[in-house]
Length: 504
Image (cartoon, rainbow, N blue to C red):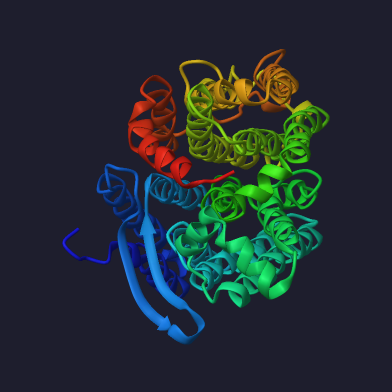
């Protein structure tokens, strides 16, 4: 990149856009669309210039507070670069979906862009202090977006969201302050290197006593809340249901991936031996998240709650893949680890894209029905709105994991990798796939098929602008389902580099 600080630019662009949107009045959405589009272009530039060997590239590093080991330290590899692209796509989708925001649009779109800046910063920062600022930056706009523009129970949902995620943040802060006391370092790369040599545990034991396992538990809990891992998930259904659908798109498409990213970038490299020692209970929790998330989705009648719990289920596969590979492996075992980790990263991207699209379709249904979103309120919508139902059906089948669509690839690789590493966990988790199929088919049958409810005889189909906006999203689902190597070819070197440095 010839020395151009593109990672700094990609973070500053949405912050600058937020400042303009705040005072742009009725033109705020246009400002946000332009800003989000610039962010997408920059993220694609980053993606195309990642190091071919999977290492962290485009590094920007400068002393900030040397006495406290605080640096301005940015970088990106296949994992971070893919999350930048996902965040940019989902933000653009969310802004496009928010065309009915008429109350304080300047503030609304400014908060959306600040949330995007928080996502960009979280996926590129490599020093804990620097990273933590962006981790928290994403929390504050999300809270106000739910609190000010949410549904009837938005107050309780926003408070629950804030309390849970703030508790996770406090756990992370305390644990990394303990690591700083022992090592005088906040750099993720340095801490991971110390962990790989065994020096980290020795330094912590010398300064603080035998608390390394407790620090690992605290860090895992901090990220598990954000994913979320059951039983730390109870904030999610209310937040997803009460948030405006465009905000729900950001929560499921971007913010939930911060938790999985944190496990891969921070928790596993630094606490690999401790995670390996907790592997069995963690796998049990991951299987519970997969299976019970699907069963909880099956019990819901509110479309937003159905796919809120479905998101818990789908992210449970990511947790299953991460915890299953936490075992020393060589030969065929190493190949299984690589398959599982490739699957996890693909699942992060594919779920973010698909889930955001589904909530976008739900927003369109709500707009046309006066706010209705209960499964039993509809029926036969494919007759008056065949294009809407057809395109939404593609997104739903992607969520189901239909071969040929993007949702299949990540789940297949996860199970391909997990089964040799923990066949019992993989076998029980298949129940989640079966229940998810029932959930998706139930939605299709009750909302799209069956006799047409006369109330919806004149239900409007998608207009040309909506079709134009959705075609790239649906096209990407199909393209990645057929040609997943568009992502895998760039991500796999990063997977190999990560596994080579993890010491379970």
